[in-house]
Image (cartoon, rainbow, N blue to C red; front, side, top):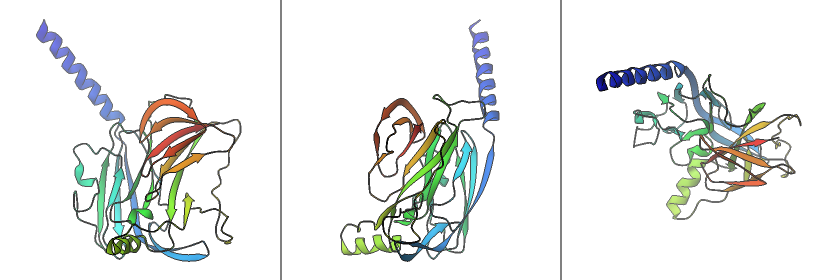
Amino acid sequence: MGLQQGLVTWFAGVLFLSTLLLSCADVHHYEFFVRESNFTKLCNTTTLLVVNDSYPGPEIRVHRCDTVFVNVHNQGNYGFTIHWHGVKQPRNPWSDGPEFITQCPIQPGTNFTYEIVLSDEIGTLWWHAHSDWTRGSVHGAFIILPAENETYPFPTPDADQAIILESWYDGDYKQIIDDALAAGISPRQPNAYAINGHVGDTYGCPNDTIFRMQVDSEKIYLLRIINAAMNEHFFFTIANHTLTVVAQDASYVRRFTRDYILISPGQTMDVLVS
């Protein structure tokens, strides 16, 4: 009798795992071309290493348990790696990204394909370069939606939007940290801060713009806030609104509502706003 029960339990477990694997079978492919591009902000043109000529870089948007392949082409002048911040990578450390730990840097003129294996992560993460300060300009959002048969454990938002908080420097990010290390001092402060690449219009420069998001007062929005700044903590608030935190670092949390949040470098928070 005990053996029979054990066999039934074993078959039930196999069936459950098979169903789970079938529901987590989507595979996605992205191409990242990393090269230097010019950006004009604060009345000054700066050359930055970026992905696909975009600052911030392209958004990855997939579902829980999916697998993602990202082919990274280094068209820049020095080696780097890409890290998938917060992804657990079960039994797959070789695509985690820290240079000289899980891999050698991707050399100029070469490419490397990362295999990103998602497990129970859900919500908002981000990807970034993992070489010196290159992550200051080589970064982007990594959005993990619920699986096709899953729902949110909170009111379903009508739309969502990544909000990437960034440090903006007039200069080469790698050179800034190299100079600081050579002098034995802390790196200088950023020239400005940006939201999704926009530094705002308070500097009197015609090319500087504000990030704008069109909303409907009758709808609920999920803001996916990412602190991609180099060293700074940020307070984040929206005038005359409250923020309901529903997830942090790709993990659901018990909901709580505040007038503002404090977000640390590298951290992500998902908040509902209506």
